[in-house]
Amino acid sequence: MRRRRQHIDQLEEKVLKIYPNTYTFSKNLAEQTVSSNSDRLPVAIVRPSIIGASIEEPCPGWVDNIFGVTGIILPVSMDIVKVLSAKKDANVDIVPDFVVDSMICAAWHVTLHPNNNVKVYNCTNNAYPLRWGQMIDTLVQCNRETPMNNVLLYPFCLVIANKHVYNILNIFLHILPAFIVDTFLKLSSRKPIMMKGNKRFNKLIASAYYFSTHEWTFYRDNISKMMVDVETLKDSEVVKLNRCMDWKKYIASYTAGIEKFILKEKSKSIDARRRRLSVLCWIHQITQVLAITLSLAIVSYIIC
Image (cartoon, rainbow, N blue to C red; front, top):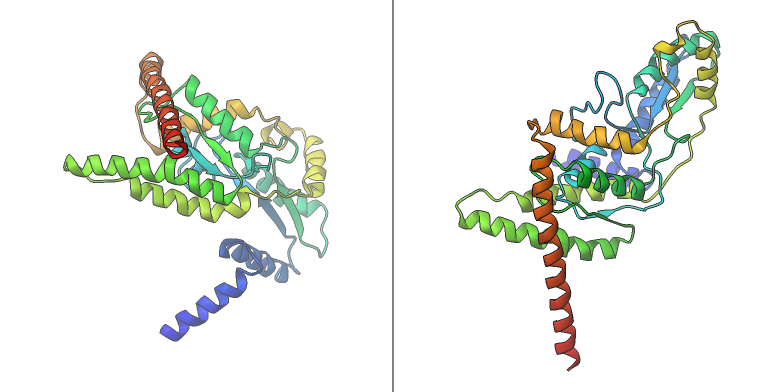
């Protein structure tokens, strides 16, 4: 058993020299398996980028897990996360529920043009790109306009590409506050949760770092041809393959979906939420003033 584990670790080490993680490697293996067994049937591979919450079906904002980008959007929406490791101008390639429409249409389209080659349909948001900085700024804006029920802190979030700068800010904006909160929870005989949550988030950020600091341009020739063919059908309006994305509207719907379907929270009045946010805004400003004053005092003490 131990020898087998060592062998697996060695294989993983070799894989990670070529692939950013074992997940992308396994997807590559799956595609190779499909390709090598596709000589008798017309086969299509649909490659979605990052699947996000639904835009329409079964309802706007529907999401049922906290994997992938949802695991980042959730803590930012709750104003727990104040700094994110990502490249501001890199494309965060989110696609909503039209991936399902693409899969259905690809199964139909591949039979129209049968050949021995496996057709690949890249389902991405190249036509309407969304940048990491844009996404986080929009999230913060949405949180200020329509805050969540139990918002903990005043909404703001920095997007930092430099790993070293991020690690420093992570200590001051995440680890220290989490430690302080957990200390108070322990003193009040309650279960500490912040450090554990912070550890999970850091693990997620580490696994997503390669993808949040790089971007790719996907060729969409096959899916573009498919769109043209679908538009010739009488019932082409049944499927929606080419959507003009309103990212602010989508992100607002996304956060509302997280609150409803993931956090299972009952909606409070918007006035009550904004009153709470107003208090948090004052606390945020006072904290900033105190932090600047303390920093200046320390610098002055060191110089003098």
